[in-house]
Image 1: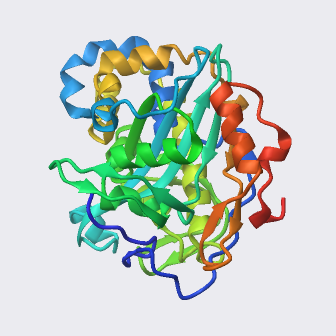
Image 2: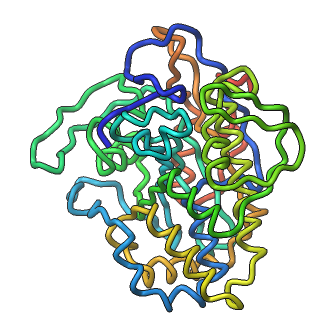
Length: 364
């Protein structure tokens, strides 16, 4: 992943944008998940099937986060709780993207979604903390795959770290800004889920309003619509055809689509159709990158089964409390003391105070 692009397909750097960024969406609770959480829950629901597909292990790409980060890391949780960093990436390269007006000739990918998913001791619930992509952070000194070192840098836009240095540096950046030890890493390629949607026979979503996106060629009328893989990929990418054209509108569609996808997969009889189950597993694993500890179906399914008690309906998703940056109002920074209180609760595996969920940038 070497290039960073905006939701419209143009380069996204640390330079200020031409207009003020829309205010981040207020936190929402309930069935609000990312692709990584979706896959874990999917495996939890059908874990008795996936042990049959050991030959698919080679599809899962692994990253040795522990080796890359060394010993200078936060302490692990004092309980049996777990913390996952989930990234949703969206490649702009490839024929399927060109067909959708996604750029086609552009190499690399971007990290569109970043969430720290905290699973408390007992694993009966979960909370996901979304890190806004425009958050200014201090990127620590990181090592690249080739052995070279990238020096630390202040006031770096969070979603630029992946493209500039790689996944291990994203983990390190999150750990440095939060003091939270990341136990596992999950990265999902959005484009890979095009095949998954086709494998399950399409996904029905309730389109909130008419969409006419000339950039992607997506045209949908408001109301329930069953989308195939190509349409689904366009749906989770569109932003010009929804709301005020901001990235936040697109994120809302992504979250809605993922909930619909999870519901569709869980409604299917995986045990009763081994052939269909294999197709779904093949599509899912082809788009997955994990830390080396989860980089096999056996390990991933075992971890998923340990999360069987997590009810998606009980999941809570909140946004990292942020405030607009005083130097560049198109960017946000972590708001204190709220952000500190939030990260402290995750480090200690305790209940997050209501005050720590309030974000000055949203007025909430």
